[in-house]
Image 1 (cartoon, rainbow, N blue to C red):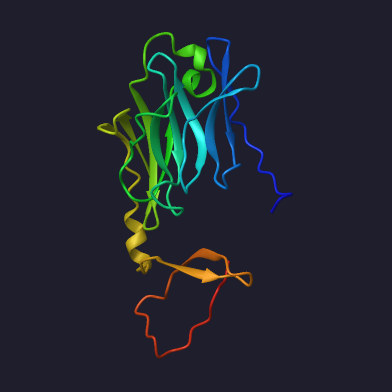
Image 2: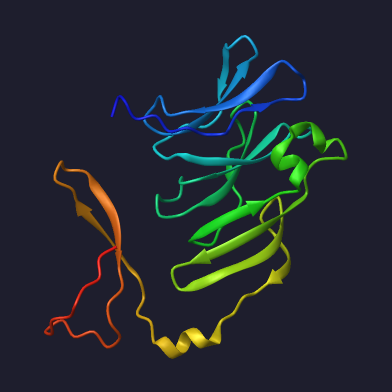
Length: 198
């Protein structure tokens, strides 16, 4: 819709005092751009038919941005890295599901505060449809250093939950919308069941 504007807080001024990062949906997908202070676009950092959910950290010493995006699937949130010039794009987290990265507070909020050296680790909070969030300490290449909180909940087995099934539903104007369904335990397709729609 030409009148819909998503507001983001991606504005990041770089330590050199000459450039800043910003996101835009001009291509139809939210992506990262590098600008001069005069407002001149210096580089489109990310591109593709997926969107950046947010910037997690900027490591100016290594000229790298860490960000969360939907590149793997619109149903997932994975952590990625890319150089400030758009090169070296790579996925860091691997497990299918939702990842939320927590970098040292200074790097996540103020790029100038990374003067002690390049970023080396972050906390990853991961969950999927059948597992509650757990926290791990990961290296910036995705290698696991340690488990912080496994968050295993054995009581979940008592509920005999059926696996979540993903599907798509076409809207009245032809847009395919993602949806999920949880069927009752021991589901019988020949029976009728009450349905909760959210």
